[in-house]
Length: 157
Image (tube, rainbow, N blue to C red; front, side, top):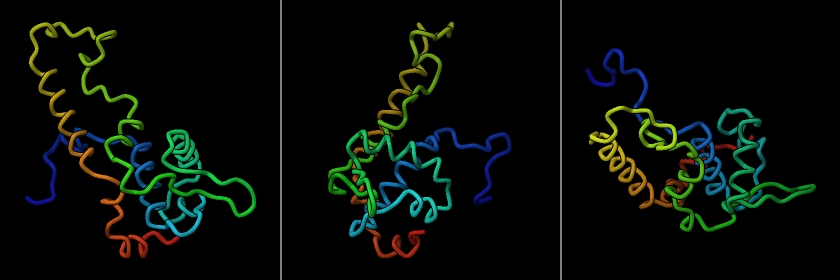
């Protein structure tokens, strides 16, 4: 049946952290609303998420040079680079700090007994490389291409 997941397989195998998800959403919002400064409150309201969740995200994005923060009265947030210069793979790599797919990817703590003969590690490593290679092909400009539709959906709060 279409749209139904098999029993016992309720969650996706690969999943971005909420931190990565919110980071991409903040960048999309700023890419769509590039004519004015945005606020954390406005972004949170547009997505229906907590301002507290976004504060850490905004700090990270500013530290990495993706966004600029303007302090003071009338301050806010804006992109620090053109959308075409923000590669999605680079952003996700910076936000997914624990990209270990299996125990054997962490050589320091792996206790897997079959590691010396296991082929799975190589297969998963190739899959992860393919995932990031696909993300590397795209920029924020690609994500904000449906600008008019996104602007209607992301009304500042």
